Length: 324
Image (cartoon, rainbow, N blue to C red):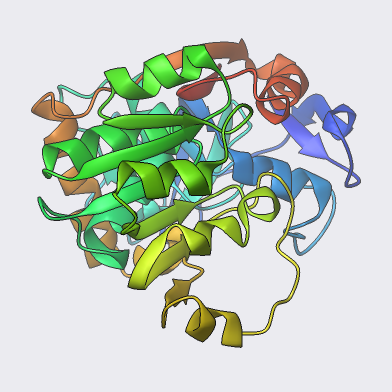
């Protein structure tokens, strides 16, 4: 038996129960993994509340972790007991140990520690697909990134700057503005004090930006569309402030023949070859020092509920991990 967080009913942070679970031996194509660190992400809130319902209750939440392989099932050839690995995707991370499909794991290079890996796999690979696949960011790109001081935001600001882009970031405080600027944002907008649409137009001389990356949702729509150049791209990849109500697609024509997409990381890494390519790019930029991973909050696993409260209250910056 091992300790884990389980959800028996959807709801607030109080539904996160710390209890014993049975793990068992790995089946064909699986490994048993002992976590050393577990990543906390806003998608965990969506899962906990039932916005992203799971097939059955109870279940162990969490979609990111790093640790050591302790047992290998039949048919697993490229992993062995003792390998250091990390992952983002298969739910079930909030546990001391778990079973997981071997083809969803990535071996960690020596220069990437377990805590860093647990803090960056989901957020870092999200930044990678946003900047390299959803829109190919380069030196000519001017972009707006909402929640620039968050986990994905700080990684994306650094990566976009390394690619030569001009980054405008929205934040909720002076402290977060300073943090975003220190990580590559050329301009910051405190949305609590300024109208971000007006400021974007001022910063860009009335032109607007090429692409808006929006994980906030309800509070930033349709303002995000008004920040775009004609033919610009709105990337809605989250909804921390609430879901966006259905809208008439004709608004995209009215505001400049805009493009819109609602991507998820898991589509971009569904094939193992794409997972390995995405992870390799992330390891390279982190290993080269172009992107620093900031583990700014640590909570023991049994305090997962408090970690969720702080995340939802926007009291966190950068990446947060649960320690085992």
